Length: 358
Image 1: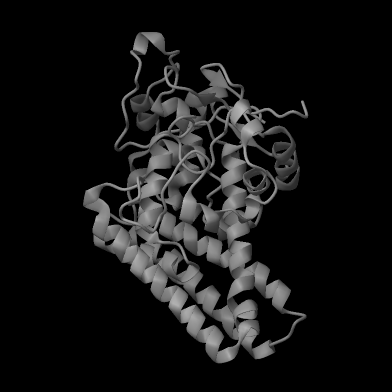
Image 2 (image 1 turned 90 degrees about the horizontal axis):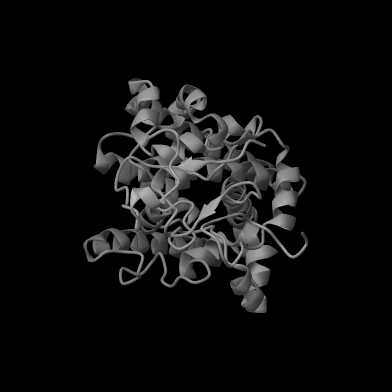
């Protein structure tokens, strides 16, 4: 694998705590990276964005119709995998909306974002804001959000149940994360008083929480009317597959033994953005909207997913060894990172994942 992936978006870039003279500089700047990308890559095409949204909705509806008509336990496991994968694809459409790369109209982004995320129990605005925090601080041990490393000392002192959840049940972690975030951080994605949010974001958070609660209510009503097996067959099964996809992709893009993590004094936005890995998910890549093309996305959030491959090809010559992509099969990467990526050293400005097994 080539290693070194940094994520940088072009808005709300935080300043470093240290002067530039104290930080090891990259051989290129954010401006130079942007200049290498064709200008049209930054322009969303609403018709194309909507086409992907309605494509996903149509496939989801078709799969539901097929599962209902067959009503066979021989088919339901297949349905769960297929529908859960489509839930994940729909999430990625909402992901573009959250980054304002779906269109240039915020109202349309928010509308499609809610329509994409609410049915799969993702609080759109709560997620959008915390995900923005992740992108602004990718690769920063102190400030990253979601999947970031703990120090060896923190790992050794981690409560047993928390360690089980983080290192053994991590592919089912997302619903828990929505309520209590990751180790060392407090707050939920549903409360406007959470440390995640600014006072000005109160009504956005409330809106998403109300819609999420309404979806939970609809599922509860359906379960009451048609029984738990209805819920299992038509929602819980696909939802679990969706959660596995979300946690798997998040884990694989940011958890690699060769990817650097930075502490204050060495972290910069562009370094952090490059602390990610591009992956090929085979035929699934097109289904889930090329989310595996992750490096360019982390550098510039406003590139629509359908332009990421073109943008990546444009910046690869400039990034050189700082661009990371692996051709390793997904299951091998997952196993290697699972074994080797438990914590980072207690000391050091630039550190890498390791474990007691090494």
